[in-house]
Length: 181
Image (cartoon, rainbow, N blue to C red; front, top):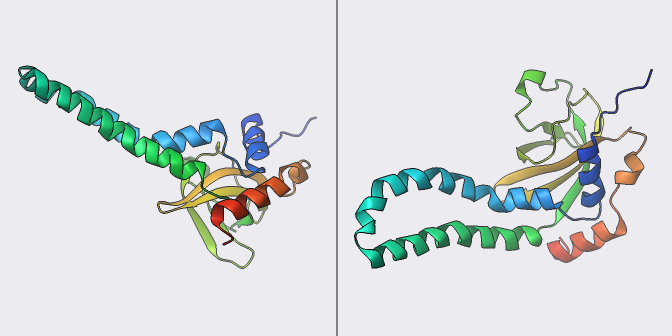
C-alpha cells in the first residue's frame, strides 16, 4: 500500500520556485491584484447609480471613466513594484501541540519558531496543507506592512525536504532585496 504524499504537486512547484527567492507567477498575481477585488465589487452599483446621470455630460463621463481606471491601476502598479522587490523569508517552524481543527481550513495557520515565538499569518497563498501536531515545517513567507503572508509550506521530515531548502540564489536575492538586514 502506497503512503499518501502530504505535499501536493502545486505545493512542490511553489517550493521549487520560492527556494530561489522568487515568487511564482500565481503568487505575484494574487498579491498584486488583491485591491482590485473590492473596486470591482463596487463598480457595477456605481455604474447603475451614477452612469445615466453622468452620461448626459459627455466630457464628465469620460473624465469619470479615466478616474475609475486610474483608481484601479495605480494601486496595482505600486503593488507590482513593491512585490517584485520584496525579500522572501525562510524558517523552520513548528505546529503547536493544538493544531487547528479541520473545519477551520480557511484560516491561515499559526506556527511557532524554535524559540517558541508565535508567527501568525494574516494571509495564505499556499494550497491548504493539514498540519500535524508538534511537527517541523519548512516555510517560505513574506513580511509586509499588512502582516505575514504564507507562500509555501512542507514537512521538514519529508523525503524531498532537502530539495526545498533555500539555494545560494535565495541568500543572494535576500541580501540584495533587504539591504543587508
